[in-house]
Image (cartoon, rainbow, N blue to C red; front, side, top):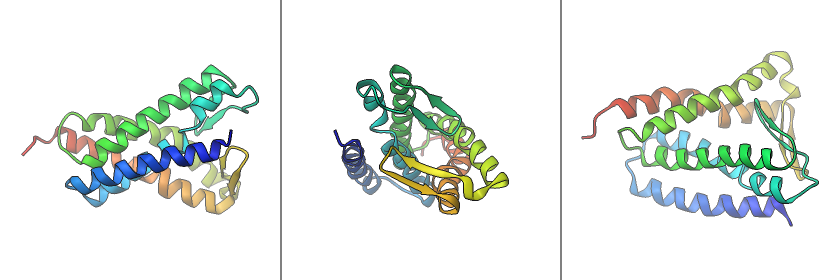
Length: 173
């Protein structure tokens, strides 16, 4: 099976739904930025849960501080990241005040640490050493990976945690 095509298909469906949610919501620049980061993260993790379970040759899973070997541990870890990211993407895109935004705030905080700490260490020690790897199909190396990881998978979560917490605390109008 072509797992890259599978992931792109899932990401395409999710993106179409995300756009519909954005069009119908009172969006802000922050809601778009944070929800897009979660959408991107969900898309990147859409194939790993299934592939980790059915493909005995799958090398394992790594996302920041999260690592799993072959099999069920990949399915559980990558599946958890996928589900949390997908739910948070749509809650953030809706941009509604109230307790639902606590999910976004907690997820932002967790991903800021899970992805942010290794990214920060890489930037300080060897910025050209970071890499984004999409299975065996594509690797984005070096400074480009550092910049993309920061802009798309660290900064939105660092900024999103207090934004979502404020939205969670605020009363509905």
